Image (cartoon, rainbow, N blue to C red; front, side, top):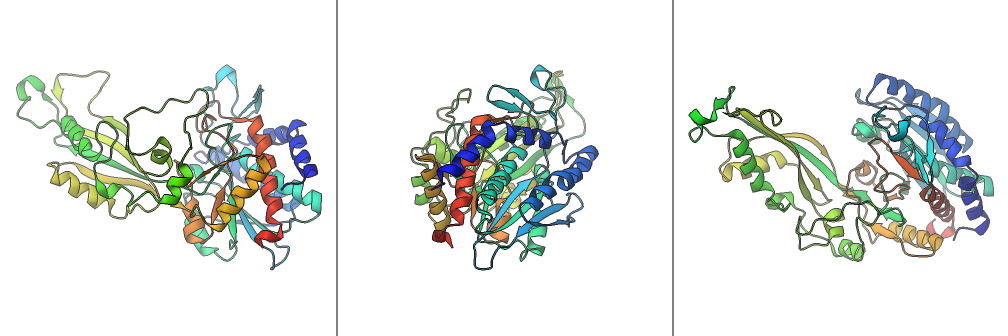
Length: 459
């Protein structure tokens, strides 16, 4: 249980405006990982913001080059108090997506934090600067209160999460000993909803692929040639419906997980999704209707058509197009084998009469999760419930993707994710924002978890 005095200091740090003022400074660095200006800002952010914050926590700070030239450097802060104490690894990412300058409401600047009621607008407020600032502040409060953390700390920052974390897996493999820890405690992604403190234990994977039906270089008049020339757009539509039907049901057994584990089913019982004002209502009859909405979102796989096209939809002509393409994405949970996905898809399409459809895998982000009934998840859930005075949502994974596999698979440690955002935060879009009540509660929860980690119960 977090001491009342420590809880009060966490709440006052937000109420006083100190947290918001510090976040405003962080937002002011335009750390886009997709632009040259952003890469310069990222270097400054590591040197001028994160290094001093980690040094103030008593960490030895080292910067490491990325083994992948597509990615930026890594920053690692390390504080070892005693080999006999538990070691926690924290993680955050310094980069943000494109700022979309000029597209924000009411003339807002993405690199200037602006306040409208409980909403703090600015690029990175939710993803991920506000979230890693919560955790850094919680550690700072704990250290100031006790003079020590009561555990060993390693804090890793990457600079390319928004471009797929290039080099992170290789870096973790090469620096396994420096990153060794008993547990990962990190913050990214959204809560279940704005009102519900949430603990999640991993992420779904993402398999992106293209279907390409290129039958001829020219388009031919539909009156002169219709009925005797195969139409690539019609062919593509038919091919897609052999993979996923018109109601979102996956029709390829190999693209489904082997089961929905009972522990996952039990954890998702009673979880209500799309529970915040303004959220779209889940469509009845969409997806696997034998599962609840929470089970479909957090415990199962979905296959989505992200883009589809042939010819010029805005200016169609009376001609059969020569080519049609579609981009699809499989969101998949841990336990789904996608290693031979291209061959599986090609063989399936050929067996259904579509050998002319070319399949190309364009990206894969692995799925992974910590067992939901393991020691660390049960410990963390108990501490969070004690801090909130009520139940929290424990999710096997979020619906999206994070580099969780690096920690659970490569570094072989349990992963606990305590998010300080919510689904309506508009991350990756104009008007990204952090909710002040979530920042306030999040700082209390993070402080409570770190305080509990120093207790003898988890040593």
